[in-house]
Image (cartoon, rainbow, N blue to C red; front, side, top):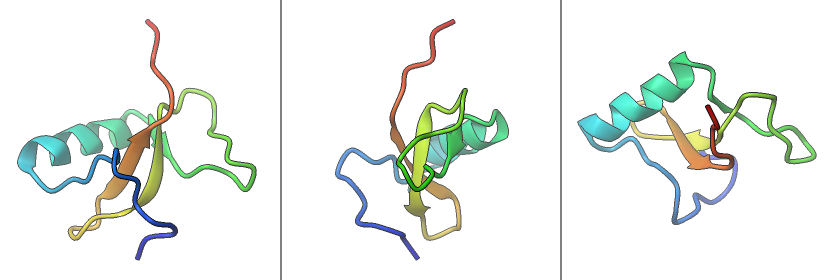
Length: 67
């Protein structure tokens, strides 16, 4: 169940490519829920806004990662 409406620019893991991308974000710690003030933890680039049909997170990009 989603916490809020899914934005139109959200990445929904509904294809194998998107599933792999989202799994990578989660594995690297680059996806997280925002806190009550809407802030993300340090190092997080994508906000989790819900979960897809297979339980993987639906994410939106909030920051760019600079190397």
